[in-house]
Length: 287
Image (cartoon, rainbow, N blue to C red):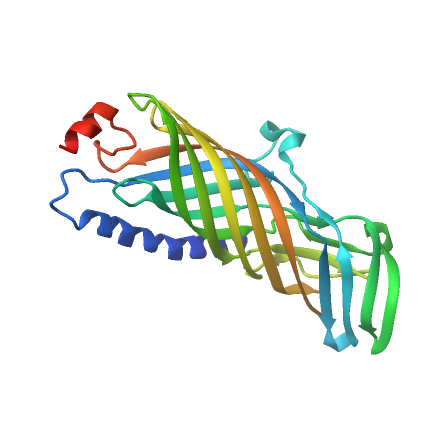
């Protein structure tokens, strides 16, 4: 299935949640001001991965083995000339969220990271059964030797997050403010799976291939009320299953540490949103 179709279906389902948050925000008709604010950001990332054991099962070939503690790397792309390629080729990320409570410090967020996972060239210990015979061997894992393993069109973490904002500083007119945000969520992974094992290549493509959970902290600087720059760090744990390999399936899990730089905009639903209202006016409205 095409990645765009899969992602659109997942996000369309998630967007159904936002109207309920908006409706709940608007039910208190006696409230003098309508709160709520949407935000969207786009940015780029880099990752580091923990070692992972990849388990392969190819029943028709009599194979049930594992590649133990393989190491992997990312492929940033944005350091190769970001303006010379499409925006979605490098490792990118976006956030789409909505602040839903009166204090505007809680939000629901759709959080997507296009990350790339590539098993590095290395010597790999293979343990298990091959051709219905026991095996405990070492192989040179590289493309020239008939091996590669890419989630290179994306390991693709999708999370549905709850976000907490803590204000650190703002000017009197709120044209500049600095916030700390913490995020946590869970969601599916949508990898593009492409590999070759012992000279046998799979049929590459996108699939929903497991789940992931993550926590993220970020420092956000907002200028002229509506535009912001955000620097984030994220810890993600992903479990992949039923990944397509030649005549079989693979599964693995790994941890990921990620750094992200994003630019975004925030748009209030009402003109008296406390994120956008000068301090003296907010104080007067409380009396």
